[in-house]
Image (cartoon, rainbow, N blue to C red; front, side):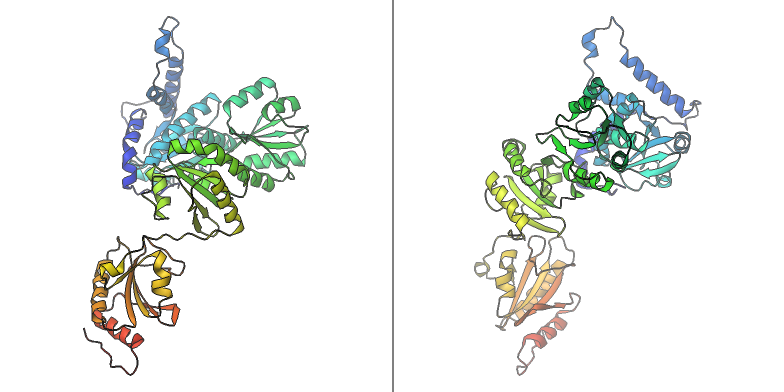
Length: 538
């Protein structure tokens, strides 16, 4: 399962896109009483139709042949993907050696994003002569079939090998789907024997691993093949002719060589370790991403799972980032394998806002630089101008541990002007008003979306008025959704804590289910001098 299947409001904007994509697909319904042909025959007819479209009459206006719109191209690709239903699913999966199945839902925006990539991959696999049958299932429309096939979320990709399912573990671009499908169906490495083959390979592959071996045998070669079979994302190629291999990686000087090639300024990276599968895979994990990776919905899982746990995120408008990209790449080169650099379009609310909310900066429109240590679950913010030199200094500080963890905070409120009976505490004032205060502090921790917080807030206001004459006690509140502090760790809302003078490190948690009288009695017992009469009636 790739994603949860509960739709949210953020998905609605792209629902129309998915509807349009579905309108191009051709449903093959075996339950139609007028349909007596086998599903495989239907598929052959559709492929034949594609071939007819490819063969335009010689006298046809050449201009019209160049007017295929993107919709027409997508329509053609979609027809290669077989639509499954409650009648044909079992037969199709049982009768084909390899079936790559996409389980989707009409409302799911990620399904909409993946559908054209899946269709494009189907076209490429057909052209390559792959034995993989590409199929899709509307899991909302056919829930029983989806359940039998173990489709629990949307979108879900599964490869069925002779009827047995294998979870999809590759990337989500058309190229990555093709690479994964070929690897899992018998083609983990492409052998390149001639200059022409090398030139053609270069045109079709943006990123790949090249291995040069004098003979395709031996322990080094076996480790190379094992790595190719274990890796799920990168196309592997092999050659035994050094001149052919140099077309793919110009700096090769000897056999038993392995390197990764990417379509970016840092194009070539050679492997200098021993030929062991685990070491090769680790090398690829640390070097497969660009110097600066643009985060998308489709690559987010790969980014988050990177072994480079210290990740710097640059939020900027697209035009502003164009200016920053080249100097940022220069900075990134200095931190290869230590810091991962990621760009997010700050205008893209779906991607940017969840991150910026963690910093209380969700309304920001200007360029921002943040960082996450995924190993320690810490976050950081560059609080100076996002110039290349400041970003480099920020990254150095992250590596050396000299940058303080960032805790979000609202602006400091004016409690005096507001004449508040319950003081508003924010992240920046938590130390002064709570931890370092010589007085007892009763703190209410709430969030705006908490159902029961309003009732507790009214109760705290009532208590504050009741104890107004007790100078040793302060009532305060903090919005936990907008403020953080390392010594404020709260799991449920609302929460009440009594920070006693002289023992601020061990706050006492009060029950929010208690009535006002019970709370007043407890507070009296904890904070009033023993020789002073308890005032426990409200």
